[in-house]
Image (cartoon, rainbow, N blue to C red; front, side, top):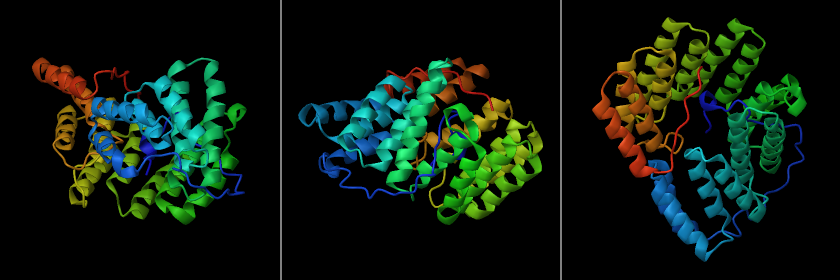
Length: 334
């Protein structure tokens, strides 16, 4: 599930087209999925170089394998190589146009590219984001990730590229039946944009309750407080998220990376941020959402700020060993 905490400013999409096309054999052009299992493991563990080598080898033999193109897009996406990601995701969509997930990833790649260029060209890309997310929802109106991204796009994007509160409300209704916690988070974002902060806080809290409570939901609440410089509430929510993560079936997961990011951007408890990232890197429960090379780079920045130059360099080298083409941009502020 996509964490709203990590949503892109120009991401997420539309719903008003529920003339649902039945997805056909989405991977008809793909090789046996078992052959790509090692790539999936590389993606989860953040072994970008290994994944790229495997996929290029596979595609040299079977260039029409849609799933391999999509996986290669996702590796490039992790490395923030937006043009390369777009190229591979476009190939996947062309080969398997009825796959909802492929359209979703193409939309995400367009969104990150749009966010990176900060020019009038971003508007054209934003329209492509909307188109791909809409198509993803058309193809599978139960795709929670696509619906979540769709709703966030409607909430954040200006009307000139297809954003709008009423459209986002339609997505909320669809999410309520599928994933209530995500619906509450989207309602929180809508209220926050309307500057109805009591309602926004209430919705983010409701998302925590509806989630179980899940560590990710706590971190989303902490992120809301950080955006409004409510530091005490932020730290309370963040520590609750850490506790929830420790009690989870798969502890020390990506919520810890979210928490460290919130602390880093807020300039709060830097040593705790370091500890969270170290726990994650030592965990067997890593996620493709937070690849290890990104976390090594994040940890290096924190250690450099604390004056531990030797450890900072060690983590930069660890990141490069996993993804030598990764050149991180400065993190966004809350």
